[in-house]
Length: 244
Ligand code: HPA
Image 1 (spheres, protein in one colour):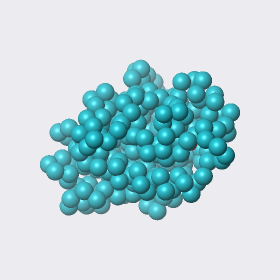
Image 2 (cartoon, helix red, strand yellow):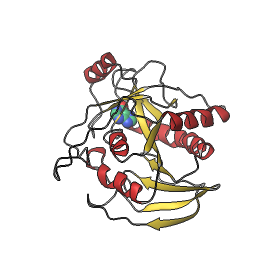
Image 3 (tube, rainbow, N blue to C red):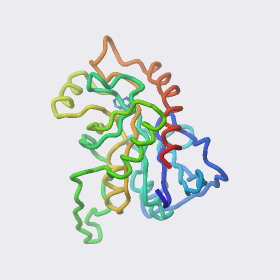
């Protein structure tokens, strides 16, 4: 990865300790304000832009994130590659908490989100190909980085993007599983397709933080999710650093 890479931090990843000489930058966009100021610095020789998806102090829920402003701003900063960090629930049996997953497919169950730059408002009808929603090159970087650190990584996954902010019912997770989804999160879309609309490479590094609803005894524990996030983001940061 030679060019400018962005990292979008999700729940549990509010800073990148390895970023050197980081400067804060505010960007305004035709779509409103991005989630937070951008931190622009160096990781080795690479220029890296970091964005907190949920805002400073984790104040923006998944359905209120201004995905268009975030992606537009990253493009305006010269970003070509985006690595999106996402906490997810594990649907597939083998995807237990602390699993790292690099999904290769996505299914969008979100609604009511501003999900395109080509909304027809300026006669700008435009269709993008989305057969392979994630960049295979970026995915491979992430997989190689995790392997290089001897961290187990699940090299494929189908990410179900749900609306949130509530978690799912057990029957909803059964349905997602029948659809072929293996992990579930709330922020994967429309982030991935907006990046494609602006011609940026995009991949997701996901940390499983809970068994999805109905996939373990009892209810999903929000306290357990917090603990898993704290433990797991150390690994995620290591993979990010190694991949840059
Ligand atoms: N469902 C949706 N989003 C999530 C989950 C989940 O179980 N865990 C972390 N993000």
